[in-house]
Image (cartoon, rainbow, N blue to C red; front, side, top):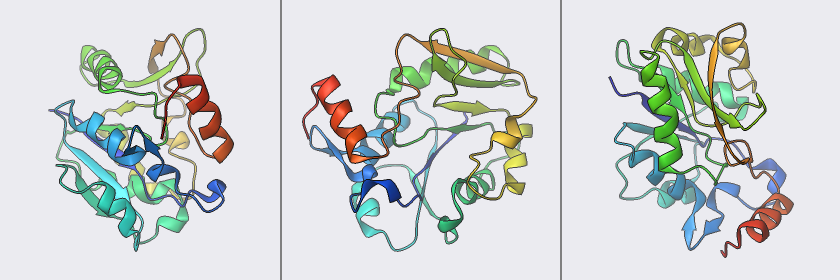
Amino acid sequence: MKPLIVIPAAGASSRMRGRDKLLEPINGTPLLRRQTQAAIATGCPVVVTLPPNNPARETALENLSAKLETVPEADEGMAASLRHAQALLAPHQPLALLLPDVPGITTTDILAVLARFQKTGQTRITRASEQDTDRPGTPLFLPNAIAKRLADLTGDSGGRGVLRGEPVDLVRFADDRATRDLDTPEDWKAWRRANNTPT
């Protein structure tokens, strides 16, 4: 069964000083739309969690095949999105978590981590990382039995407690594209300069 790819986009971009990091344009396309398109291109079903009353993010996702899931308690943090996502799983369906603020990740990268996950029989946590490190990155694939534990999450831990003690297969990329998230205007400025990427 194909994993359900969840893009948790219900956060508030609180460190962007009034800007929305998920609507930052890359070559004219809002980041959230760009990452959702990358997920859809894998052929897996995709869910994007959104905060209430944020029409700009909904507009950015118009005419895409992803399911949009509003999270009323989005202010609680990442746990609220993950709880909503796991409730959408079919029996025995794995869950994949793709963070939306990591613009270096492509469809090819997602498929590479998925291929490793499938080699385990979809029975082991599999996630992206950097070469020569164990730094956690995105995407992250969870077997169904582990994904179901997300129902009990609270706060903004991002599910770290669910993963603790579980064996993890790492797909290490040669650079930091799986781990470099962009949370501040300074992050965006540095990333655009390094990648020669216009708005």
